Length: 402
Image (cartoon, rainbow, N blue to C red):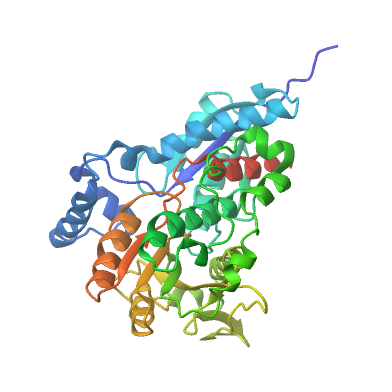
């Protein structure tokens, strides 16, 4: 009797793409603009931004998706090994870009040539958007249908183990190591339970073995009594959780699920940090077929709470049309007007260092903050951090077994 051949599985890792050299910019912008040629001035402006962040000389900025892909396949192989499965089912990670070569179609074609039977497709951005990431799914599905590969799509994965924990630790690390030394009343007053000796020991095996216990130890709540004496102090530290804005018109009064997911993730992250919301915090909801915005009540704790406030903002809006707000620029002005002198930014809607973080945040937002006498801080991006990769791998693994 002939043994039934196990299907060969490959991972299609999709991302936006980034220019490698200045000569890439025209084609890159034409792709982003759906075939419309950019002006010479538009190209010059974008080149200036990339030059400012060191794009042309920094290999990490140009190759981070490839680094994430290599890390992903290693984590997946370790995961199946830990579960006593056959590591051979994960053959490779294939990378396809939306606006740069190799394209999503090129990657799927290569998978077919390499004998891949099933493609597990995932986007590096964990939040699904009808306006944004759905385009990746549509292109991948068309390409897979054309070559005869089964496609299993990971639509969103921000709820996976490790993703929120990465951001919680990164924010706590920023508050303790960068903001804390600048405060007269000490860093224990702005963060709960951070232990710098624990932030780097996590491994895939650790997470698979006893995730809840490890995270509980890592994010302990043993400082409640210490915080009691600080909770009535006037604080001047604010955390801004930001994500890429969306144009209003395409939503047609139906709130994109991306907006809801970002807001929910922000609230859950702030709650895990025991933060209270800023009085100017605005949320966006859909009611009676219309999109509405309004002030949100704060997260308050009767006995113990962190005096640092948080809010959420939308950044990197395009130059034309109406975009979702409040904009990050508006939020910065409001926080400074309310007396906040230490503003920490966590661009949770992004996953790596690139122009919309290194320029829009570290250049534009920094200048706006510092020009008004406040201090600018930013949490580090996931890039190829193992907790971020573990979250992605967990989502992929679920689609392997469906």
